[in-house]
Image (cartoon, rainbow, N blue to C red; front, side):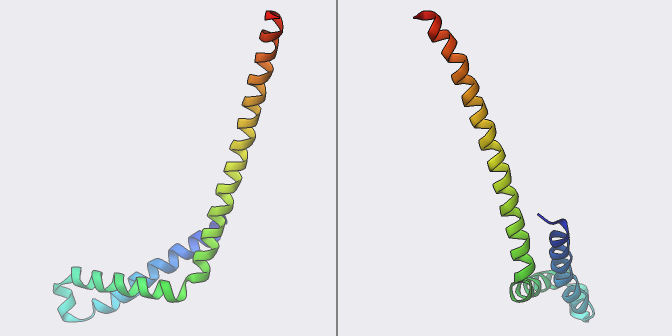
Length: 98
């Protein structure tokens, strides 16, 4: 996974929340009910990210999927090595019995 795409997506998501929150805090009613401003800003940020941040999300998701595939391939190689070693260890024991 490219760290740049993950950082970019994180920064854009934070901005999608913080900018509407800052604008809402300019209204006097939201200064008293800051929790309501946070809820509205979260909903606005979610909507903006669904509409405009699809490509950065796809980049991050594909990077995570590639990383998971590499880890699985590395684990599969390790499993094969362990199985081969166990099979090799079992052969001399059975040859001595015969």
